[in-house]
Image: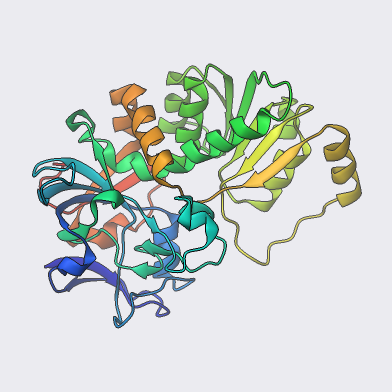
Length: 353
């Protein structure tokens, strides 16, 4: 069968390869792949910044943002042929550490977890794949055209869960949320903030086109100036760019008792001038919290499903700006100025199924 593969550690080795059918040892449920979303992580793996093939394989199948349809499922699994599903990306380490043993594998403490399409497990950019029932999340058929957005939504579902938990340390009545970056993660962060009834401000460099329109359609405010220039003091800040100067703005300009969540991953080696003494003074005197978050567990996938189900379907559909056939994968990785989310179509229908 066809699969999109790389040779980890070899830059620009991306190829459409013929690989073996998935082994039953990979899971009891056989899934027909419908589509995968492309993101910065995939591009970094293609550039050989990281990525790890499964044991015994020279290739790694890409694709962690996924959507599939059950082809075969065992009795008693809770799944049936035809069900729309998303595979959970991270799986617990084999030890397991305390977090993984408690079902919180997104907080793995020893680093021995594996991740589909990233670290030690083949991804979902293949025609068929297998998983155990507990590694699959079922979606309503009404989410067929947007279900591939679930995995990035889980990152924000986890972020908001942690923001709410941190806020509960004391009196907590957030009113204003700032999101930096209007890519898919930033827009989904804004969606979940709007669903919570907050006044939402989104910052990005793009001055016109789809991004400002999507933000406006959420009832949020779009900004092309900087957070310091805007004079906005936010109770909640979600950083989705990974740009060092923007990160400094986020952790330096907030309201008292604020919570700032960092979701963007920065490249190493970047430096910016920083008065750490002033930053520390402000954070201490304002009771500020800054934390980072990555990946998600099953609870966050289920929360993500609920968020997508509650969203305006046409708004979600517009996030997917291009659907590219699997055999034209190179075009999918060629970034265009108006791209928001690019999806590779695996099943050949041109839609998600």
